[in-house]
Every structure is written in structure tokens, then in C-alpha cells.
Length: 297
Image (cartoon, rainbow, N blue to C red):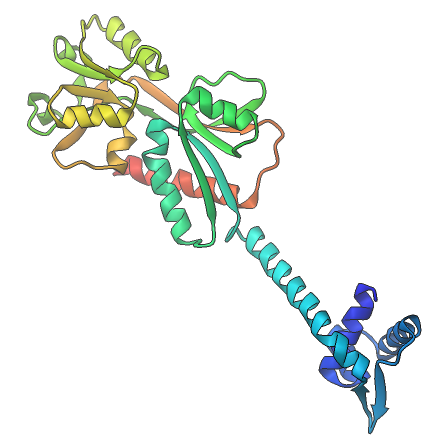
């Protein structure tokens, strides 16, 4: 039996008449009769007998009905799943983010997005920026989020947000009273910043050098979160990515913008010419909204 024959058989079983089956299928009565006749000829067994104006299923028809109903239940399930995929209610988000991004607003955005889609599956990797790019190139993840520069012909990028390095410190620090910190005020102050190999460290070093500031690096770290923890315990002022403290507020810590601004561009990274899923498109829209709201906070 082909799919059309299955549809006609199923409709006749449900309706009990050719007229009712035609109405269910939105076709003419003769077309239902023709398909049913060809089906019985092909199977070489009778499926229905006409009794009092209705079609009475034969034992053979009753025997195959459960399997045919299972087929249509499965088809209905596939159709619902396709509609859910199209509507962005189910699917898989495969993401990789640079450490301060993944541990900050990206984690917050994933959590709020998934709350509205409990059947959504998420894979989120926290990595260095070069590792993020590698995961995107290998198609292990659909979307990467990292700081510029990103120079790789196998990926395409777009700016998610432009921000600046923040000064994170205890709220009892003398500079915490300022609304913003002038870079020359950091001269001689214990500074917590990234290790020399970190992408953001070169931005910090260049800005301090241009301002003629002689920094006293009290601690160098690989993660913004570690820098914030050290600032919390009084080791100095952490020069780190600005959104992490907003996503993970720690009582007793404050963040102040540094002037002139050390600009940070955060990029969305995708493999060039890679297909884009509907669920990821919806997530990116959600992520942009979350970042805007967090920047205003």
C-alpha cells in the first residue's frame, strides 16, 4: 500500500462511508472509490463490505488497522516536531563563547531563552577566543562569540556589542566614589589584569602606555571571573570585561568605566556558508535584546 492508499483506507475506517472519507480528505467520492478498488485489487483481499449504506471492515482490515494508525500517529508527531522546529520551540543550540562571555551574559541569555523552551537542548562551551574560532571552523558549534580580532577566511563575523574595559573594585576603595575612572588615576595603583598572552591584555597595555601610566600589576589572571574574585578580596582594581559583573553581581563589588575607553568589540562568529537553523536565529535575536538591556542596567 502506498501513502495515498493508506490515507484512503484510514479515512474510510474513521468515517464508515465513502462520502465521509471523501469529506475528511477533501476529495471527490469517485476518487476515494477508485483508490480503494485499486488497493483491494493490489492486495487481492477484500477490505470492506457494503452493509446498509455503510462500509463494514473485514477481519483483514481490522487486523492491519493498528499498524496503519501507528503510521499516522507517527506522521502527526513528525509534523508537530517540524512545526516546533520552524517555530523555534525545540532543537539544539550549539554555542561556544570566550570565558568572560560564556560565564556572563551568554549564560544568562541561554537560561532565559531555555525557560520558555523546556524541550530545547543546549551545548555551551567556555573557551579561549582562538578555541572558539576552531570550534566554529570545525562545525562543532553553530555559533561562536568572542572578542576581536578574528582573522580567519573560513568564518564570517558581525558585531554583537561594543563596550569598554571596566574597573572592578571593592565598594570601599577610594576610587569607588568616582562615576568613572580616569586612566591616569591608575598610576601606582595595584592592578589585576589578564596574562600577557590574553587577547584583551594588549588593549590594556597599549592604553596604559599611551597615557604614560606605569601600572603596578599586582596579579595577572587568565579569567575575568578570577580577577573579580581577587578584587573582592582586596587585591586591587580588576581591569576586565564589563558585562560579567552585571551578569554575576557580587555584593561589595562595583564597576566603573575607564576613561579614555579601552574599546572591546564582541563578535558573533559563524562558519562561512554554513546553514543557519531557525532556533539559532531566534536565539541571536534574544541575545541581542539581553545585551542591550544589560548595557542599560
